[in-house]
Length: 71
Image (cartoon, rainbow, N blue to C red):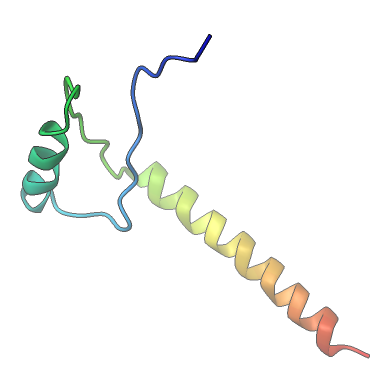
């Protein structure tokens, strides 16, 4: 028996303005079987979490570089 999918999450490479997104939304709506497309707003919470993740990875990269360069 195979699993059934009820939907997908599409992640954009960067936040875009609502009026600039109309073409993307219209294109996704043209895909066979798509019932609705509802944008997810980039709220302050999203921005804060993104910055925290970026800082976490920057710190890990920094530590990794230091461990390679330190005798």
